[in-house]
Amino acid sequence: MRSAIYLAIGAFAAFAAAQGSTENAFLNPPGGYQFAAGKPTELSWTPSTDGTVTLKLQKGENTTPQDGIVIAAGIPNDGSYAYTPSASLGPGTDYNIQIIDDENPDNFNFTPKFSVSGTTGTARELTPSATGSETTTASPTSSGATTTGTNDSTRTTSTPSSTSDESSSPSSTPTGDATNAPDPNSEAMSLTRPGFMLSAVLALMVFL
Image (tube, one colour):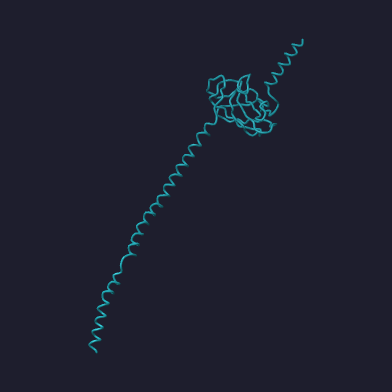
């Protein structure tokens, strides 16, 4: 009798764990959510936890935290998100969306099961997709272009300064030569001065 009670309690605990918690409960529209590939559909829920949440697309009955595809990670818990299903999804009526509290992953909830119309894929199971490739490839390109532009500007600026230094050097040489050159007028005065004195002496002797 006791073993039957323990089994019933264990089954109920497993069922409760699979259903998640009552936090961040989805607001389901009349008739349930209708999703179509390539078209956004607004998800709504009642925010009841602080911090951010993560949304995952799940498929099937038994899901674990490692299952599914992340469709939005670390978003504000503001109660709404527009989800656009991919056309590459496979067929099935057992899709649902899981909301997970990032601060306490034990707080999670699900939408009711739904199908996605207009899909072209054939896969029966979901596989996690890689994220973050666009952020890592964009940064090196812009930084490299900035570095190249900086180097070109440096070379262009330094060229005129070296040219001006070279052009100023020859001007100093003629200036030194002109300073040391003899004055031709001073030599002419030294040559004519003795003749002038001799003429003055002879004129004085004739007068006497």
